[in-house]
Length: 79
Image (cartoon, rainbow, N blue to C red; front, side, top):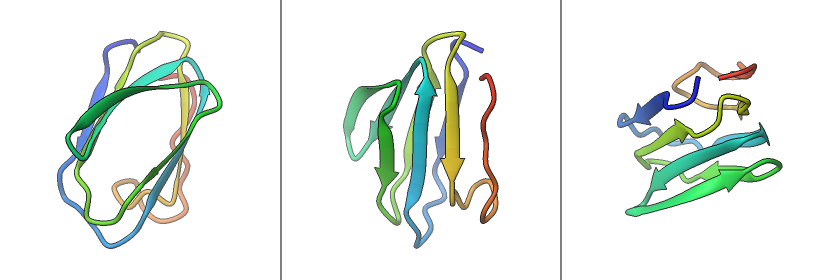
């Protein structure tokens, strides 16, 4: 749902990879905040805290190899 915000503040030694399939996501990482749009790929460095906020009701965000979710799981669907 629009407005949902997730924060990762337990850094780990692996890269996190996300694909914004639809909609927009506000991302805060390494002291900067920006908007990721449909078809953008987010590759977060190891040992990095970050947050993401869903900006549209139609947003679909897929997560690949994200330690917070468990190796190999995919977080997706409508958020």
